[in-house]
Image (cartoon, rainbow, N blue to C red):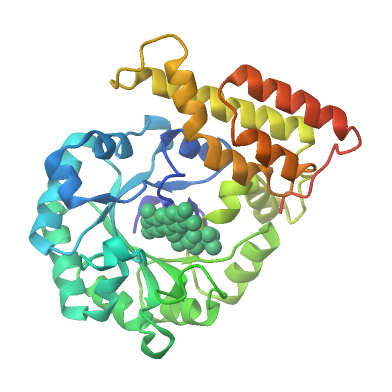
Length: 342
Ligand SMILES: Cc1cc2nc3c(=O)[nH]c(=O)nc-3n(C[C@H](O)[C@H](O)[C@H](O)COP(=O)(O)O)c2cc1C
């Protein structure tokens, strides 16, 4: 049994390409997320050792336990890539992506396309497990390719038989993308069907949602994606609710701004360390603030004055500008000391 399932019901931060980089993961860990998974990296990117891939593999010791997620369609390549990643980075586990619905990935026989090909699924899982044993390997699946071909109990059983040690189930089909609702009945069936821990994933917004899924299914942990993107402090609220049965007050507007500033400052500090010719004064800061814009848009959702904030975030280029935006927003909403965190 993976150690993080032994004494608690772990809260996983879902892997999200372009979002859950090392900076964001450190922040979530600070709020009480228990387990991290990297953004997905391709076996081919690892062979080429390209700069972006190396950045995706970056993590701090404080993020452990952390898994690096691989995707690809070739069992031998994935097995080789898994060995290389293990050798370079020593993550706590490797995770295989069988859920990505993006065409670029699916058309190369990766991600969720493998859900339609159980023999290939078994070959990939088997090859990676064999290559890195005794190091743990986990997997992330969707419930199937389409509404007519839901097969998550079958794929989860195959993965278990191949030596996969935990499986995260996103309760949507590939065809759904991110639309519709996650089907928690299927997640519940998977949790009944296998002995390995099942991590439920899809549409968790509040601490109450977690408690509800935890008490009505046999899942061993929960994984949170888009809610964490907007409210990374949701992990603190969930852990508090699980531990005490009471709700934590949501953060004040000033606390939210302090969080946003900290996130930007950490990202600037990280960019300054990147070997990418960002040495000229202000270059790393500009680069970091540009790369933060999508995340800033996520933070703005649910904040008072969101539309105005989005317009400003689209152009923000420095920490000083962010401070001005924050001061103005706080001044405009003095009574907004508490925002709904969900
Ligand atoms: C922007 C974005 C990027 C994602 N990237 C990945 C990824 O790299 N690997 C993966 O397994 N899932 C990825 N996902 C899926 C999430 O991990 C998760 O399964 C999905 O968002 C459903 O959970 P949620 O309802 O809590 O958001 C991504 C989702 C989003 C929104």
